[in-house]
Image 1 (cartoon, one colour):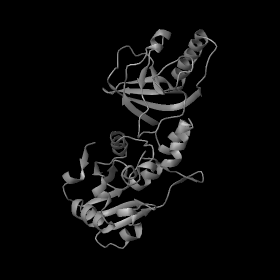
Image 2 (image 1 turned 60 degrees about the vertical axis):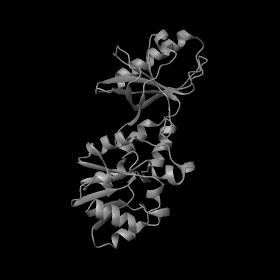
Image 3 (image 1 turned 180 degrees about the vertical axis):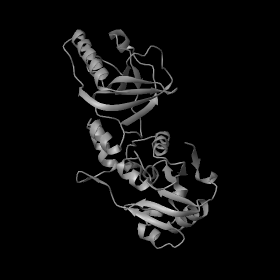
Image 4 (image 1 turned 135 degrees about the horizontal axis):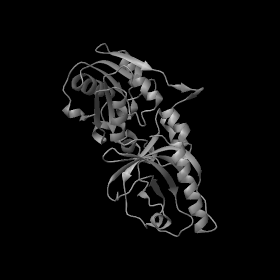
Length: 294
């Protein structure tokens, strides 16, 4: 899917779903359903208006576009959210963005959507505007609890990536550039591709996971993944996300890598000796081979 900046949009009648849509979870998908265009914001508005309270993101912009495209949407329009845009009034947002730039004939938003300077604009403002038809989608509940990005972030930090995937509608994916490490995994017989957790993105809790890894060329491999500090070894590298790609032979240094977290295998442990660690790594790899289907 092509990501189109707001300034480059060609006006035409559109059905537009509007929101931040971090994670593109099941609730977001209800809002997006029936639209032909998604309007979103980058960076996250709170990183500009209240950076001290900005959430850890579930998706990069590119991952968001991939997920939106998988829902059958043809167009993702991105507002470059900065201080100047944050100062626009609710009326300016409606007039200049929804009407003038997008020529929206239909608008779809969640019931908690707010817009304009200091979030002054509420859904009632959209409903009363006769220039377009507005559909307000209720918050989405699953098993009696509301699905939200903040709830999903909590699950991921707790290591419950399986439940997070159920609310997201697809597994959580962490993306980054493979870094040079201490090559400790290679010495143990399990060379890993290493990514550093980085703001502003959400990182799973410290544990061992089974999942998959996708290379820049689209190839996918089953992956045993460790998130943590490697308590068996002294290191100044801090927390790392280390993925052992099953049946892969090659170098990934400096290349982009997407890691998909499917299930938590165990907590990170300190073993009595290196042989015990290798035995457990062997068991983790075999569990990954059995659990993950590509």
